[in-house]
Amino acid sequence: MGVFAHPDDESLLAGGVLAQYAAAGARTAVVTATWTAESRRAPELAAALHILGAGTPRLLGYADARNPASAPDGAVRLIDAPLDEAVGRLVSHIRAFRPDIVVGHDALGQLTGHPDHRRTHQITLLAVEAAGLAHLYPEAGAPWQPSALYAATHPESGVGRLGTLLERVGKSVLAVPDAYVTTTVDIGPSAGVKWSAILAHQGEVARERTLPGILAGLPEAERDEIISTESFTRLTPGPVAGEPHRLLA
Picture 1 (spheres, helix red, strand yellow):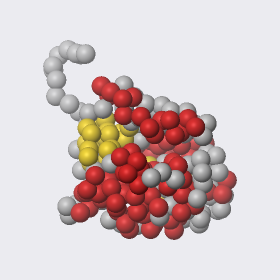
Picture 2 (cartoon, one colour):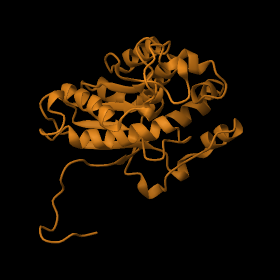
Picture 3 (cartoon, one colour):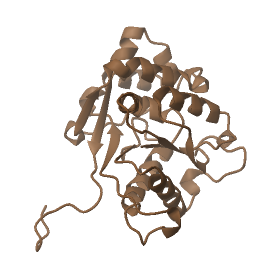
């Protein structure tokens, strides 16, 4: 299960992994924290998830921090929502879908540090642990503990050309030390599916300063090189065996 802030984050950050797992017969799903069902990006999200084999949209129902159009129904912004409420909504999705693996944002909020990305990371950390504890959010269904939580991220050594492209349009570039990356996946065989899913977010592709728009303006070979690797940090939830009588670093 992917948990991401905005429509298109799922395709950009983990589209290849989602497509690979779906092609192998695994159940996959995506929860999107912002942009509500009435917004213009909801149909684009549905199209992208269909391409990736990730089912239908699962929405937390909050507004984007920077775009009032994300919630035509007047929903509160994700960054303004009570933390306990947002965690409970995500716990409901986790318990309903019962994923073994959850993939979300990193603590930096990916390359540009968007506040929605960072808030979604915080909510996901709390919800993955809470989902396995029966006394927390009992109204959200029977407890379920995912086996692994991964944060999609970008190592400093791997930003390369992408960093230059983002800086050119005035965006910050935030990356983690290479040692933070525990898993690097070559999604080359699924790059075509990933790119098709990114293109499904037509509104973002049409904008010059968004990552989909930037990628759409590149030669195919250069674009494929950028999107064909996905990096993650494993953040395993739940208790881990250790020294029973001492705290160890």
